[in-house]
Amino acid sequence: MTEKADLQSVLDRAAEGGRITPEEALDLYRDAPLHALGAAADAVRRRRYAGTEHIATYIIERNINYTNVCVTACKFCAFYAPPKAEDKGWTRDLDDILRRCAETVELGGTQIMFQGGHHPDFGVEYYEEHFSAIKAAYPQLVIHSLGASEVEHMARISKVSAKEAIERIHAAGLDSFAGAGAELLPARPRKAIAPLKESGERWLEIMEIAHNLGVESTSTMLMGTGETNAERIEHLRMIRDVQDRTGGFRAFIPYTYQPENNHLKGRTQATLFEYLRMIAIARLFMDNIAHIQGSWLTTGKEVGQLSLHYGADDLGSIMLEENVVSSAGAKHRSNRMEIIDLIRKAGRVPAQRATTYEHLVVHEDPAQDPVDERVQSHISSTAIEGGTAHPELKLLASN
Ligand code: SF4
Image (cartoon, rainbow, N blue to C red):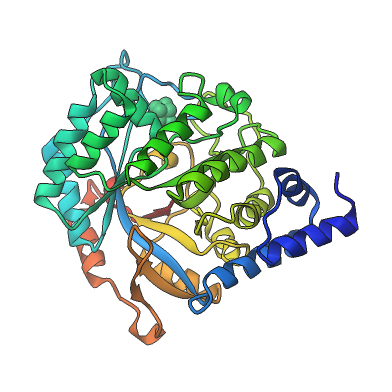
């Protein structure tokens, strides 16, 4: 274990942009004073974004949950229905999906995230058909969706290699992978919460294949299902090693486990301090990943604001639909005006970004902030069903 004086010198080295080892990262994560850790991470962020360090970004997207039928039965998941539970399983048809894409465009969204279960009948062909139909109708929408777990599943169903599966869905319209299914990559915690998912090594191998084919991705981490601090840092190391070879991970997004309606009930959630420490250590340790995202759907707006002072440069999305994390108890949600206000009150200038992080609109002048009357009137005229807001048109904020 690193001595106190040495801990400060490691922190100073990291703040100056020096690379730290996994052992040093673990010592900092465990023992560095919280605010010192945040200040070091913020120094790294400011240097990386010198000239635009006053800006924090968000994106407008829609999650499209195309099916909840899933054969993988992750223990932390409150969203899926096993194929045998016919009364609980559902699948959206293509017309329904295209209608959701149309609404996304109408509401100013730039990205869709296809997110759903591992349906036993959905091979590569299913995704080819859907992505090509979406791109034909709405070429302006970026399809930032799926992850290595879905690739592994669809390749198995279609009896093709992961490489062929990626090539085919990319040709059909997939722009980038959302990095879903990373959960916890080290073997012990992964087996404990997602025993039927591919191994962490395989998840990374598939991401590396994608990166080498020119399909970039983000990366994620599920915190708080009983993993140790050492396993959290090992997760970061595994991603950093692949990133050294490919450079294909655009961002890292840690989020906290939500304990409702699943088979892990009773597990301790990560505390908000642990979450902020993770944001900071990710910025310090993952020196080869450009963007660190505060995921405040699961932690709340105030923690989202704090994350911008602990190394995060982005607050993710205003979601036009989200059902997966919400099923497990995530209750924090917002609309565009709120996220702009939230970023301003955190001392940053808000900017709407593209999937690839270019700034689309920089909200320099508060007097010019969007009123979003179009969004409001759309919700009030179409989202009320039986006296309550339609759940799929609630404006949510998340990763
Ligand atoms: S997390 Fe995904 S793969 Fe796991 S059970 Fe839920 S829907 Fe299925």
